[in-house]
Length: 114
Ligand code: FES
Image 1 (cartoon, rainbow, N blue to C red):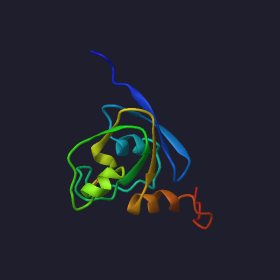
Image 2: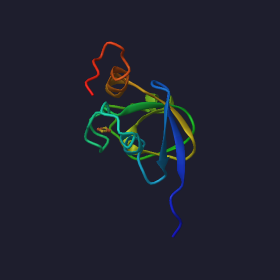
Image 3: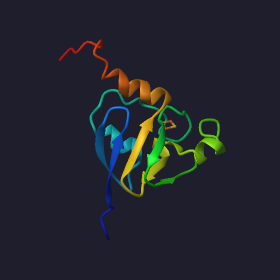
């Protein structure tokens, strides 16, 4: 059996980049960055905390709650990262809860305790 391919995903908010396999969700790959800022949500397309906008590249989407991603938003590239798998190298922008969590870690005012 062939091993799944891996693509490079760039997070516009933080200028980070991570590898993500085609059998791994965008959220799963992001969690492997080891960032504490990644919120733990339902991972099933139901809570909306992992919402991102795909700015370039292709994804395969699984069913997601319309209360979090409307048809119009989906047409603009919004997806739930726990329900989307990379099909090419990607650039994405985190929005809403996920953006706040990622960006908080970059704030110069947040104390570093380690
Ligand atoms: S983690 Fe709940 S919708 Fe993605």
